[in-house]
Length: 195
Ligand code: GRF
Image (cartoon, rainbow, N blue to C red; front, side, top):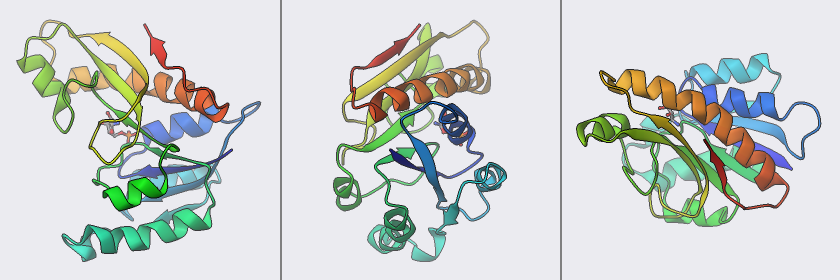
C-alpha cells in the first residue's frame, strides 16, 4: 500500500510512521506533503529519502477550496492508497475529505469524543481529568469525528502542565499511529487499544 503523509510542523508522527514501515510491512511512504514550505518535517522526510512537496496555504487566505485544489495535485500524483494526517493543522473541506473517504486517517491528541479541536491538554487538566491520551480515527467531514481506529491512554499527574502532558501523550502517539497503520494497511479496521 502507498502512503502519503500530511504534516504542518516537526513531523515526529510522520517520522514514527516512516520508521515503522521499514522492513516487512504492507505499506510504504510515497509522499510527505505540507501546507508550510518551512515545516521541519520536510527536511526529516528528505533525510529518509522520501519524496516531499509543500503548498503554502497563506497566499490563498480564507479560500480553502483554492488551497485544496493546489494541495491535491502532488497528492494525486503520488497515487496514495492511504493518507495519514500527522500534525496537519489545516481544516479540510468536505469536498476534499470525501475524495478520500475510507482511506484518510488522523491522529488527535485527546481521548475522542472528548476534546475535539485545539488545546486538548489544557482542557483536560482544567477539567480535572485523571487521564488523557490520543486517538487515531478515520477522517470524515466533521472535524475530529469519524470511526475510531485506536486509542492510547496516559495518566494526568499532579502538577502536570499542558506541555508535560503533551510530551507524555506524544510518546504514545508514536506507538499508536504505527500500530493502527499496519493493521489498516492489512485491511483490518479492528480498533487498537494501547494500555
Ligand atoms: C502534536 O501536538 C501532536 O499531538 C499532534 O500534532 C502535533 C505535532 O505533531 N498530533 P508532529 O510532531 O508534527 O507529528
